[in-house]
Length: 439
Image 1 (tube, rainbow, N blue to C red):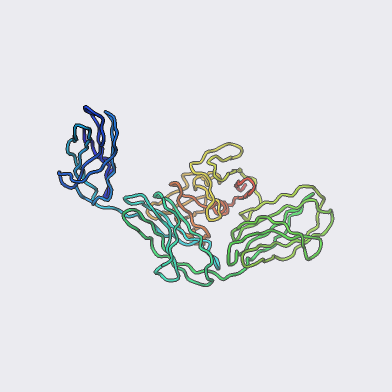
Image 2: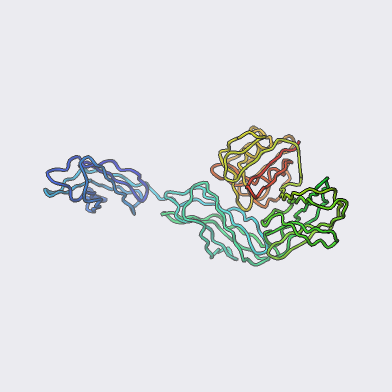
């Protein structure tokens, strides 16, 4: 028998190893280790009962004391007796570290809901076994919400709270647990809004030969996320024909559109935009237009910037795919687009490439977790986890904060497109986002 070197030492465990160098005159009937905090090795760990010559075996000792020396030796037993390997020892690490977790600002705050945000800075000395949030209407945060049971350093996590009371301050803190204990982020707070319907504006339609494009604009989401939006149109000043652009959420200050065809040439039509949330439906003003010609197709679109079109380069991204198209040429990104907080997130460098911004114009400050993007005379600063953005030293609010995913700074593609004057269009059918640079 040989007692081999220990492996995987930590503050609370260590893996001891042994090898059967010879079986002897009869088959082995038991093998394992004896161990303890003295060279007497008074504790026994049976690994198995049948093993062949030349085979190695191991056993993980757990529940050990930090900073303590343990002795061990391998053994094997057959009909003739028990043989032992040489005495060996190891020392557990000095202390066991709990995870390090950060609480970030809440997002998507409405009259009865909000999204809490947290971040795992370090898993500590062991794997994380649980993480989530504590929250409540006092700073004690007595209500627990478990988000998950396994996470890596650098992972962001969220919790969607619902059925909240309007005009109420809520407190919350992120937490994470491993075998060494539980750590908490700072206590943050937010105040819910009033429970109200959205505010929507009907914009002037664009009339072309054979079709007309309707436009709407979301001024405010109201007291909760938008559930559906679109238009009513018809040939009277009380339009009754409904077209749904999307049965989904949309950001405040976003424009949406719908293209009508098959209209009667020379006929006056009326249109009004609408948006619905859990509190009800709001409508924009009724506008009129005169149709020109007719065709037979109807195409809905949703546009996330105020610019409807431009003639610059075009990039097409697909949710979950690390390959995207740039002017028809296939390009690979190290992180695929993903949806978080009802937004499409892209790595900053990938988004900048789509917008024609050079990597040399992007800088990262690790101490403040701030990224700076320079495009001509425009200087944009964003901080990970912050819902404030600085554009030429003017601070503005964000609905969703930039975050780190897979080691990359990621942010909503609609946001970065709008800042740098590009058009961003979402196609829900094939889950693609098209970004077109300004001319």
